[in-house]
Amino acid sequence: MKIVVLAKLVPDLVEELEIDESGTALDMTWLRLIINELDDHAIEEAILLKERIGADVTVLAPDIEGVEDILFTAAAKGADRLIKILGDFEAGVNNHALTRGLISVMKDLEPDLILAGVEANEDLDGSIGPLLAGYLDLPYIGYVASVKLNGGKATATKEYPGGLIAEMEVVLPAVMGIQVAEEPPRYVAVSKVRQAMKTAEIEEIEIGEFNFEGGPSINRMYQPEVGEGAKIIEGSLDEIADNLIAIFDELGVR
Image (cartoon, rainbow, N blue to C red; front, side, top):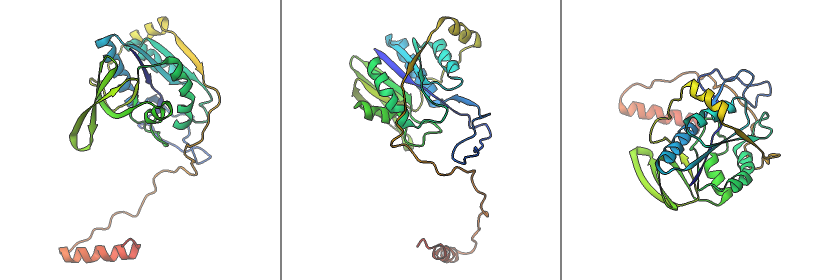
């Protein structure tokens, strides 16, 4: 059983986000990048499956500054193979372009199961999981909270809004978007990561030029603009209703 996990670095939203001079992108000069939280959960779910059934786990990530740290951390957690995807990521790559670049990589790896975080905070053109499933013509299940493997099939526990939970069975190979792992991502000591740096090897795969077709076209990025504040409507229910209708008429939304 071969499991491939897709991981990537995203802006740390705790940091102060600033727009660059072009006005169409974030200023990455001093911006701190961290592993996408839900990708970290995907790695954890893969390691849990490895511990249960002896699966072989490969973690791959785009070549962005800091990627070695997340790959070696994955190795310290139990990942068997680490792959760094080489390409021109400095200018920014949307998910459509990245997914197209990964098609040949996935065909060479021949995974039985592909896991990815169900979303990331900088996804502007769709999550990578369903995009990859579409390009590879594989079934996809998103918002997954646990995975069980049995022969050539997988059973996913899927979360729905309102606390609803369903179980779905799918024939492998398949792609799943992980919402949360069955257990919180495990902590690994710095010493264990350093040991992984000495013993684990990061492979490099070049995916060539990107095809950006289908991605978003960003004309402007800006900080949220400050409004004038809320208007408090007081009075009886009839008076409040009349005031609301007047406001809707003024705005032209009725």
